[in-house]
Amino acid sequence: MSTALEYTAPLVEKLGKGSLNIQALKDHALELWKKDQGSAKELGEALIAVRDVLRSNRGGFARWYRQQGLNENRVHYCIRLAEGKVKKARAATKKDQSKTDTSATIPAFCTPKMWSQVESHARARGTSPEELVKQIVRAWLKDNHLQPAQ
Image 1 (cartoon, rainbow, N blue to C red):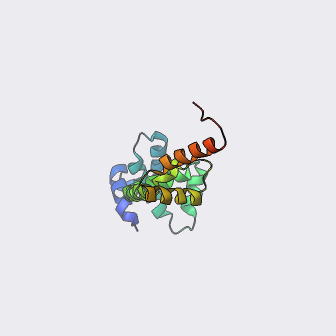
Image 2: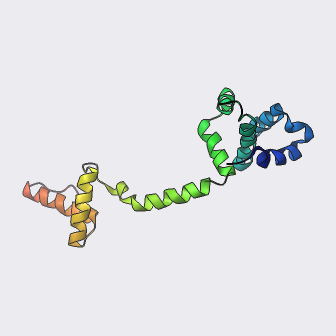
C-alpha cells in the first residue's frame, strides 16, 4: 500500500509549497485528466495523492471522481499504472490466454464440452481439432448425400 507522502511530496515540490492544500491537489489531478496526453502514470500519481488525502473520508475519493465525471475504469487504470501493477497484470493475462487460446477456434455449433472431446479425439488421431472437424463435416455431408459448398 502506498503512503500519502510517497506521491504527495513530489507533487508539492512540483506545484509549490502552498499545494499541500487539498483543493490544489484536486485541481492538479483534474488538469492532468483534461490534458491526458498519454501521461497516465503522472495522472495516476496525482489521483493517488488525492485518494490518500481523502482516505479519512470513507468513500470520499470515489464520490469526488464521480462528481467530476471521471471514468472509473480510467481512474483505476492510471492508479494501477502509477503503482507499477499494470505490467504484472498484462503478463498474467498473456500467460492465461496462452493456456486457453483455443477458445477462438471453437466452431459456433460446438459447446466447450464438445470441443474438449474433439480436441481429445484429434490428439489420439495425431491431427488438429480443426482438421478433425473438417473430416467429420465432410463425412456427414457424404452420408447425407450433400455436396460441400465451394
